[in-house]
Length: 304
Image (cartoon, rainbow, N blue to C red):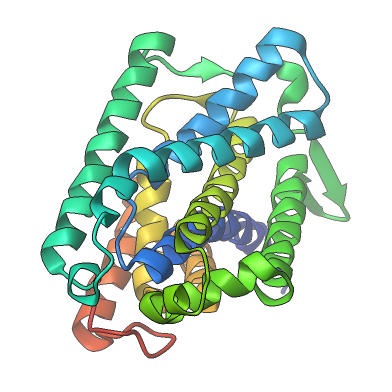
């Protein structure tokens, strides 16, 4: 017998997983290039949502313009984040400094500090309460397909996510800046010696990853109907778990594991209360660290 509720939960899980995937790619790109974790990525997600809301309240543009504004806000945020939190720790170019764990830990703490400052700054300016999205922009309109009922937002999240992922693959494999990103991720010293502008490549990595995180933020905001300063924390944690499960520097692995997390969380509500569904991600993280120390998808450069 066809279970309608199960199928709709499966679709919900795919939509959630795609949001996690967009954020996990940002984590993975930055880790692949700099070998550090960007703990301010959740705030990029939040800033993208607020940029879209400000545009809506200011001049009520069409939906695609709202998405473009969120992308632009993500690009600017990524550029500023790299300059403020990461560039000061890249003064030394020798191999020992690039591989130094002390340098890596200092950069991690720097990104964490920037994330706290950004979140608190938004709370001061915009308030800590949830901000509602105007009714005409909500993506909750029902779409009926036979006995199934979906929300418009699920299709939009799916479409934007797939287009973004395909565009990223094209960029990484067919463009000069994409090949530069792959070269720096593989061997930063070697890339610098053969003439690749590593600073420009790292900035491009932050811009691309932050654009994906920001567009995920505005899509979720339009779908859920509210945004607030702390909205990036939970998706950021889930995306980080997906990155770890995928092997730290595997984009394909991060996307696949993000989908696994999203579908597992959605289907778990058939058996446990929805408030406990967050335990699924943390359980996957513990299992990965214990039994798959290099991740599920590959050969990481070091044990997680």
